[in-house]
Image (tube, rainbow, N blue to C red):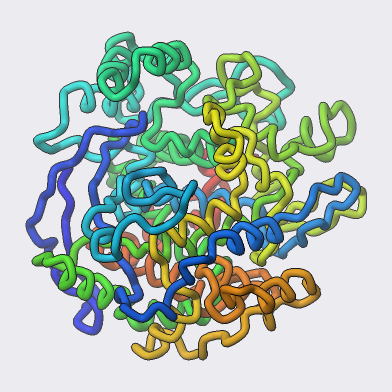
Length: 592
């Protein structure tokens, strides 16, 4: 795979990027059963590694981190819909954010020789982590999770190329392969049933054989046999994390359908664009990238911070990449992603997850005939490849999502059913996130299994093991360089309104967590203080700067090209520009 680096940025950034610098590290064979080739891109620190112990959590913090994590996940209360509070944000933003995360980073939540959460004591210095921890995804919004990436490199085998090519429709190679739901109805709407991810049960035998060849040497004979037995249900997509729950799987499907609809639209209309794979891919990416800023960032971040980062052309993020390149001895600004983004700030979406959703007429509000009055959190994991479809082969028709219940917020829950909103961005997680049933299924140690299934404890321990600075230290650093304007929060407990137990714990902690606060919790508390409908200044800056810099570093991105939906040959069904996630879904024919 060719990886292209920007050789300019920051205050020298111009409105149109120059030609990409010539550099092409080799791609890597997928290591975890994904289809998209691994990238081996870089991770680094926004906060320059410091010798000051006060900039980091104390060495004896682990027990109190676990206690903090436990306080962040309240006990289940079936009679209380508001055990964690609702925001005014539509629920689609939770899973849109998960998709975006999978587009940019992988490996910061895996057990490796670099990071282990069972002990969580940092195993390496910050310098070693920056050198050795590699990112398996391309740090660009190029939809490699959808298209598989470009399989070009000395390490790439014919089997990898064959599997990636198998993501395309065999009879119509200009289109992407999609799957068809099982005829277990009723459908939630009047649209077609071709709304499952493509799965290996439908591909040619030579593609299945190639996929097994890739994994054969990396698994034990017993694990390989189990993998082969489950292969028919497995999705043939770039990043298998996009089939871990049904909502993100249906979101991923919308990209396949959007691409295919673009081919049909270009064929039916004289736009000057050829109805081929590359035209549809380019337009899918451009619309997606435009929506990232105008449809996503400006909702989950403080809009004023987003506008400021845009006006500055993400100067400080490019300065981070330059400083990282100096530390590791790189000759270009490189492709570094900030660990503070991947391990802390962008995990804010975990607090937006609901314990149940008004999913469709079969599993949600209905005028009659519903199977359940809502879709419980655990059920959206069951009806996926990893969840086994409860003995089925693929998604049943009655579990196809009704996106009309997700793209607009409706906070009404007076009837006792879930509101059509995400949860607030705050310091509480929905109760099911304290016991993730699909995690660590094969872990024999019950204590380690419980740890992996508790998302808050896992996140806090991962931040410790990867040597993240405290929220106060990073906030002070970013203010000192002019990236943010607010002062660090001296006492994070002061931001917590109506949570006396959590406040008392922080202020009474031996590790002084109220003033040396884990970065993930700091960003959540900051968001909570704003009302919980978007991130605070620090969290907004980290997320917005990362996204905007990545777009500006790509000369073919919508932001670099000043693309808007008005420039596209594609139109929504009503003839208007595709300028919202709702119109995206309608164009893709996955929403009425």
